Image 1 (cartoon, rainbow, N blue to C red):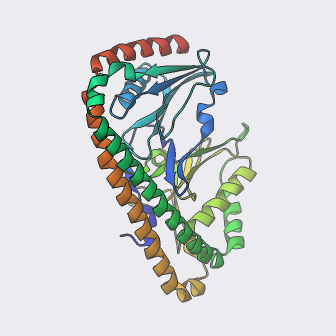
Image 2: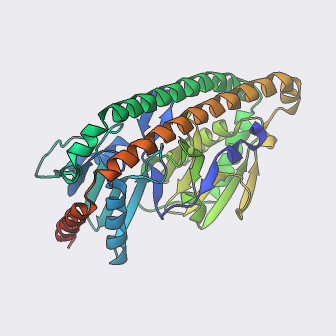
Image 3: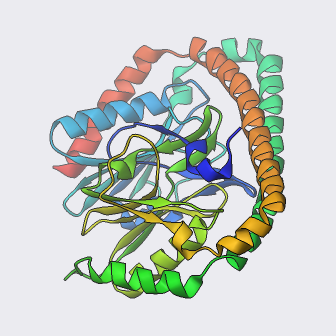
Length: 365
């Protein structure tokens, strides 16, 4: 159990491939995409939608495509599953004005072709399994699917309850936060950051996940040239990040905003200046630290400490409940993967892989 004094450490940082994000998040409202425009077919040269059950090789196929095209000089962006962070849900490969996307199109992020043939194409890994094996395991598959679904529903309820408590904590933080002082500081801070000559853009991503393997954070922005650490105080960091993001956008600088599963801004990245604003964690070297205690009414927070600590404990207990429910979902998910993988002809998938690589290469070259 963590104190919210070290809430950023609630998320364990994991290293993934370069340019890695989560495709969405498990939230109080269920699964939510970070940016649905990623799969807007009008902006893509080609979209390959992979269909197949758990453990049928969808993620492995995407990783092989990524490794192949990066090895010959193409840039890629990896979007991982927020439930199973080892599983790749979306891969985007770029070359000049061409963008190729390969996406997992099965539940819970079902995806259908909107411009079939001309842009989108279905890759059905179901053609590589032996249906007899799956039919023999019908009752077990149905049981594991139902138990997995129930676990996700329970996690959603815990997250919804945690969100309600977070609202109470947010109100306390707002009352003791000196917004005007923070705004003046942000203006001075931005005046020291070079402006850009290109037009400004804003993008939304997710780098934190409440997952089947724990509360995790991707280290994507830790590779920035300049890392500025934000030291939280009494839960006021979400308010500060909101003010900072709004000020950066108003100053016509490009920014990438990362949201937590509960809707708070958790990190900000300025791509043109290569500057990242991240919560302070152990193991990183920071260019400078922003201590948010300077914007806090210490007397107010001291007088409300007992009530705030109680709410913090409730909040973290509910997050623990969500994580326990997702850990249950993991057991059922892996049981399903085991059943489906035994029914697969992976040699047939190798043939599909070669066809896919050739098809993508023709589009990019």
